[in-house]
Length: 309
Image (cartoon, rainbow, N blue to C red; front, top):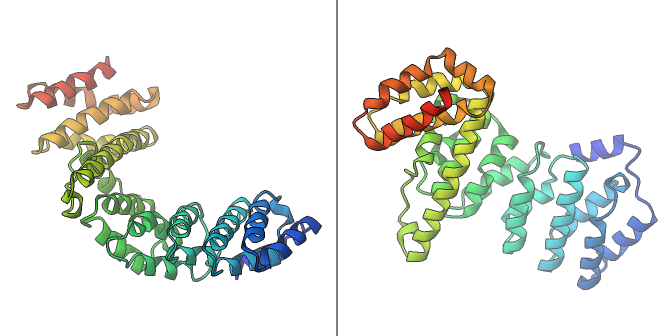
């Protein structure tokens, strides 16, 4: 495994006596002492970690005791991440754990890694097949990093972009953009999300509480998307601007409104961004929109124009 090769190649990864004592306590069939030792292991210097540490922690991720398994997963994830190691296979397997705290936290940990041990992708793909589980949306961006242009990953993300679940749709778009860098795909999507146009699934409409949760989630995604597209525009003002300008004349009111707002936000993000939009004659395009039939669009245009004075 790459993880072993990396550790063996680094002479600085040598376990000291303290680590040895903690490992000895961690493998004893005494859950309270095992938990205590695992918590202490998370505080050690990653330079004191060797193959033995990773091997033992990996085995403990399959322990029968839920609490021991949970603490082993946290320790393995923490040490591996801080040590800049690939995501261990044992950590990946925890996303399939039947104990919720293990599963949820494992999903969060694997999402931190950029490199993965062999076999991790297959585990993630298996987890993605669990219909209706939040695991699917949580792992969307992770499989994009673990599998990149693997046909299985692309197929899953393509389907995910049209999923009934809003978060799955959102994360699939984000994951797909991380792979293809297609601004023509992600910019309109962000506008769609900013305007809170996501429709709830049947599951989200079942109860008053689920409806409220959906609306709250949609609002969070709208705010996040506004920041994301503004940052994209700040980084690539000319490219994003060229995509937004035609959308000022879109037949859908929300799209025209969001495009105007976003152009104003990008212009206000930096002098460089504003200069790039000025070269694209964005102000003239906005001025033409002052006679738009929709009042909300005219209002958005008026606000955007204040950034071009």
